[in-house]
Image 1 (cartoon, rainbow, N blue to C red):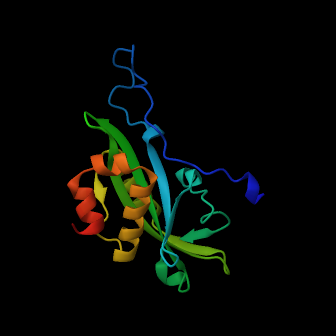
Image 2 (spheres, rainbow, N blue to C red):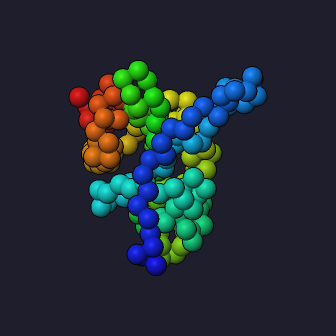
Length: 169
């Protein structure tokens, strides 16, 4: 089963779906440009897991999520980061980056996450917001390394707000 696992990249911007149409769908947000990145806080690792679009990432599968973190005292910490890519004159860039916290305790098959927060943060990412200031420093660094390694040009074209938010530069 492991050998069938495909490495996923970021969703690449497609052509404007409203091209040739007058008005229909104009201004509607498209999910084509957003990708979920899961950060394992303890391991300091990040990876794209498209399954997270529907709360079906490898981390989330088989877990019943509860709204109170106290109910999952031994939960392993993760960040789900919504990364939106857009294009500007200089080229494509990381336009929206928003992080949501969650924990998972595989042993008891329970986890903690705020579903409304996850939905709202995906929306904020699509609207080109940067919300990373609440992340721990190690995870910010992990995310910065991951985004830079994934595509140096996207990173270089990204806002100072993102770079400052993740690296404190």
